[in-house]
Length: 282
Image 1 (cartoon, rainbow, N blue to C red):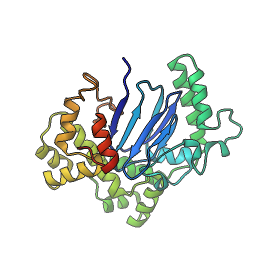
Image 2: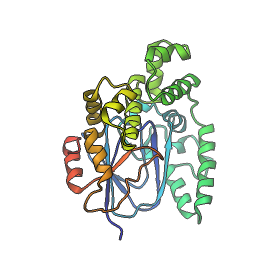
Image 3: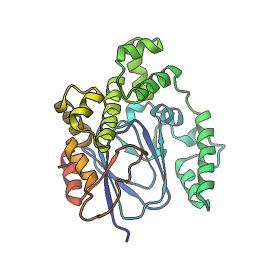
Image 4: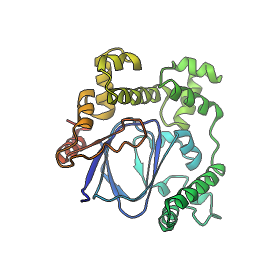
């Protein structure tokens, strides 16, 4: 039987474009009012969000590198950090630059995808449209892409000074261009990527001390502090919640948004309420 679902989504090194077909999803972030949307865009995040739907949800979720989102929308990504918005409300909406395309807004693209009879055709249409829109979009810096790729490859282990030297910029230049095209500064981006790796290792059964050492945290206390800041719970709470699903949803999978990653937690209504008030899952 279909049941309402609430999921906590931890920060990941990606931006999210949700192309919904019919049913809306409600997204709650600490310090912001809930938003209920069918299609949405979420910029890179440093804090958790709770997504909720009524039991059925149809659409396509596109995870993209932050610099690719900058190219697609042409909007400085620092304006979109920790925000969930209607894609066509972006300052440089797609339709204003592509009036010759009959699917020149996200809403029109979503409707076109919903009308296609098979998933294979939907993905083909989506690939075609996003490629053409990206080719017509704002080019991202080759140096930003290079620096971001190095951060991702090392899970945030590269010092910012070394990263700047690698691409031939000053630290200030790197920070400014990162904020524009990634949204996060390189230090904050490295924190998100380190914690993403830590969640993966803990989900694989590694201990907290070992995980902290592998991921470059000073100690377990440092790991725990970063966990609380970016997921709203301790490493143990996060790990246990993935092993033991809520009583209201027995046997339900974690439904992670990225293969091989630990990105999500199924929540009870109580946990969701606690998060919306405090920004932390208790």
